[in-house]
Length: 422
Image 1 (cartoon, rainbow, N blue to C red):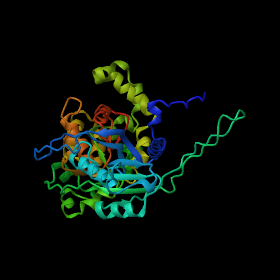
Image 2 (cartoon, one colour):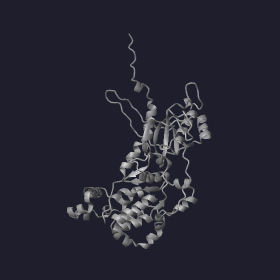
Image 3 (cartoon, rainbow, N blue to C red):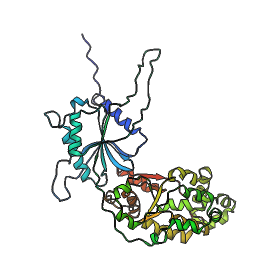
Image 4 (tube, rainbow, N blue to C red):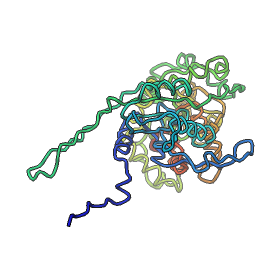
């Protein structure tokens, strides 16, 4: 009797290994960040904005990767098919690439919280010229100029002959296209806030304070860190006359939340660690009350990993922005809890930043306001999202809450620091 061939489990026999390999290859790329979903469908409400029923996407659309690319949220679709079998129009067995792209775009434009700025198409085995031209003509697809790294994971044959050589795919034939989805909102018209009026002249600020005075009272590391940042000379009202698309394309903005601003000016980050450790415990407990352990923990963290050194490479060459609500909250906290040196640093720091109005992105505001997703934080992080700028923050609770929604949000997390009265 002939032995019947082994039957693979359903989970293995139905898996497209080449497709999974291509997805993993993309996930390994250093420019892919903020991955929030992998190989999952995105389900949408069958009701459109006009209140009409629509069943076209009610079952959801499959998206291979939801992530951040070049500071913008994107959806990535991966195909490992032979280009010969990628059909443009529908057939009896295959719905056609055109139909799938249409469904994806409907889903992308209907989604709010997960809305991408672009759809990235990754054809790992290349694409036929006919389909390529159709994508360009009908959907405005353009080649994405990214160089994908090749990660070596070769296996060699062992003495028992159980392993054979397996070479990593180079994807040299891959075709990578981008279809724009995101429609840039009209530039926000807002009156210059009190923060903008008082903190809009960084050049004048530098002229007012001598170098010796700066380093002696504000600290060398603080002054050096800010000197590495680009001065933000653009005012809020200038945004009305600037092509916002070109402005956002610079890719050099960083959005600061209140925790980041406090960390930059804190005495802990600016050489006060030895003084704090030399202070009697009783005196510190009286000063910081129930936050004593919290502050000492930050002191030890600063000794091991100095804050300004950690942020140096992140802020170098970047322009800082803060929204109006952060500016107001920061000023209030410093006035209430800051020492003379911390207040001096705060005033100097504000002159280095551009204050923009609170203008949170639509996708951020579409999330329900809850205890974990507080409106205050949605305004701050949403403004950074609107400007396609990463938000620098120590607010890990909000970052975790956002990730649990499936949204890909560009954030840079740092260790917290508190005001010490320095």
